[in-house]
Image (cartoon, rainbow, N blue to C red; front, side, top):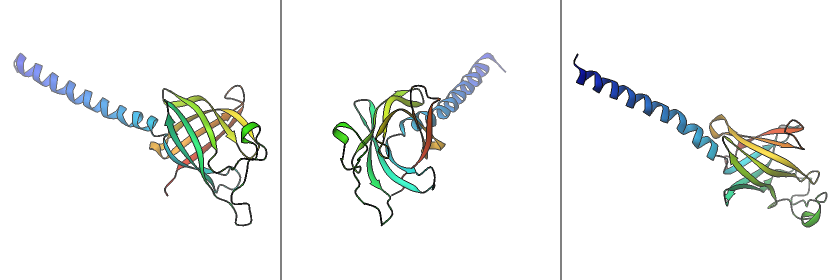
Length: 158
């Protein structure tokens, strides 16, 4: 084989390899941006759907609002946050912003906060998309990430 053919074959091989690497990276980038959307929270104890949270991006930061609650018919269908403090005290939980100020950092969003309307407390928070965009790992914590709890939300199908 002459030098021209070797060069052509080597160029073709590099193009194919580069294309394959680019395709491998594309899903990770898409997955990282997939945090925006509707997510169903799952109750830690019952493993049943608890709420639907809508996550959107505002000024480069993620925010999340409660769109829907899955409540027993005997429970108040539009509860208020009686344990919240300040301007959120006694405000309706549906429509409440519970995720704030999450900033992109590699494959996760962090630096923000999450409010737990059940106890009215706000925690530091970080989230990461998993399972090809089907799950959202949500970690709320006090101080260091080691002191907290993780939930896995699932992409809402409605």
